Image (cartoon, rainbow, N blue to C red; front, side, top):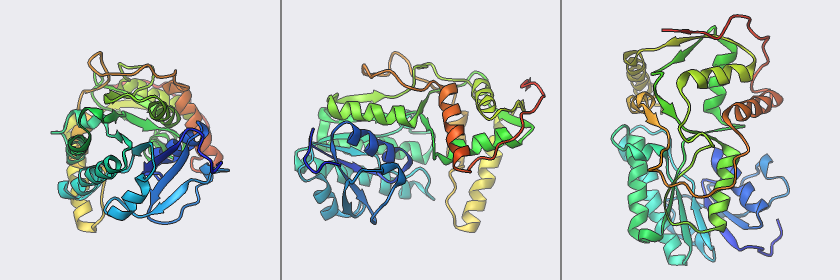
Length: 328
């Protein structure tokens, strides 16, 4: 990266995460000098030819946050927890962290873009959702109406472990689960999400905004599973799973997590998120005039599968001959 800023300096938290890595790449490609916060020195293969400035520290380190934001035109707060043992643990990262970053950005005279989640629309569903809404409220305390909050939907793409599990299941199993067929979920490829954050850094747009690919009305479970199956070249049968099964599995996962002392993403709260029927966008969701996305779901899933296979993360399998039919 050229040490002389072209557009200026942007500070990014969560730069080592799935989305954060792509945001750093997109900002650098758009001519920004990027400074990142990390607990240790990092060498990311996705940052070939990039040399982002590095501040060692975390969200609880006030001097590190001050150094991160010093001289920045914009701060993009991507960091956050997606799994934790309790609401208090979620709040320490997602609420207190947002408050500290907002305070440091405000003191430095920088704009703040807060990466929230579409889950924050329904804060009662889970500790995670509640903490993301709490983070929005905390950042507003510092910035008021000048704050930009972005609520992404489900984000997928190369190196994402959650959709890798979906592709593994589609590749290896004779059956795939389907929840409520009437439910709708918005999705976006990680590269499209990163490009849209870069767009917001360049063109300020305060307020509460939403992200999605071009299908604002979202995708249903049947289409989602069929698209994943097509991407890996299989045709497993689709089986409707009742809500009580999902809730029971989530409760079991919770107790296993307690017994083993490990954090699980599949909690009763996550089950309520999965069973919620409306994760689509509507005319009530403010959506800026973003550039067109590169990937619809089918193309994005195919792109992701090619990447997983190129890295050896997903083994190829001969296509099944059975039709991709649903059993309800």
